[in-house]
Length: 182
Image (cartoon, rainbow, N blue to C red; front, side, top):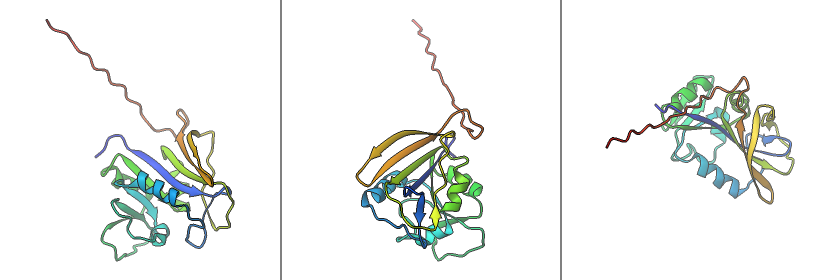
């Protein structure tokens, strides 16, 4: 079990916070898909059932695919882990790695944004028509720490502000004392 876990939300959202329409992403930016792969590769990913079903390649390779469903669904995928609550999903993932990625959908994002440590957001500069939305990022709780602007979107990284009621992180300070013996 990893002692210091980081729960990271990763998403792409249009300027009107649309993340999907009819269980599909309404845009295609290969650089964004590459960015997603680079960040999540070899780390556990947690997603809702509809997000899993929308993936073009199931399960995503070289990651522990944890699918959150409220029903006793049976999938024909032996490589996925089924969990019935976000808390159980995160507890399971904490035993696997120090970084845990929440990859959607809207309902999972809405739950996770209350206790995640970081948000990796691709913000698309255009509005899109959609039926699924990313939750608003409350800037009273989150700090934008980096932004890499591209032509059609930007990669934004937010971290939770310290000291608010949702900040459960513990910072440890270790000192190494060395005694010189002659």
